[in-house]
Image (cartoon, rainbow, N blue to C red; front, side, top):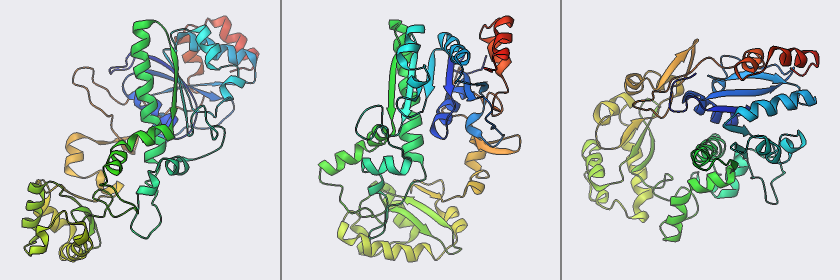
Length: 376
């Protein structure tokens, strides 16, 4: 049994890519017993698949009724089921919500898709870039006159999908523990990404968020909230929004001319942007770090993945750790009493089939029958 606040919670995760495994990783990090159901015969799993860490894998041939029944027996003992297929796939496998909840009325059935379980686009293929396009998020990111910039797949897949699925499933689990009744959690990346844009919908309604992108305070339009190239071709970030932080920026950067008094004059932002760009190019990134890092300017160097591992703050908090020679994020968030930890190495497909069946209550005769049927 793992350590952490979810110790004792049993989760069945149907194998997928990207946000699904990541959601399962978060729950495994917090101590849940996450059993991943992989397709029999599918090769996969390595130390580089960080989102598979701390889980166990069972390989089933879900085309065989014996394998479907095995999955249902696992689901009977589970607190949470997590899947990320297109709508209808689990139903066609004989593992839809109605079937699973009939076998386990307290089950939390978590479903994550890009478009959601309903709606005119529900059955269409898509990726993060498409989901955040539909929400207004992608349109809001970019430089004036330039095309929108994909923010990796952080906003749709991982932020709008995995995190909302994890939150929803855990909320439903709390409720199920009170009511004794499970339910379906429909986590659509379009819904989650839209929710992440709540503040900006409010800004637009209040008339303080403008189109096109790159002209607002938080999208790089303001001179006091942006990234800047330094003398050595590296980058720093500045976020001096509040007056006291902006005053400190002016002091440390030597911004003494009267134009800098007009911090919130949007008409002056382009001119001030050009001027401050020239200022930051006069020193190296390390020199600016010496002057500004750790102050209330709201400053940080823009680090690469390689550099981030060695930053003193990240090292002090062990934010990035090495497991089997692979640098990876440590657990998050952190708990004061029920301490979480990385529970183990990434699961190799099917590596724990017999172990899981035994641990979850299958008798030796049942396991032998499944082998004979080639269901496992």
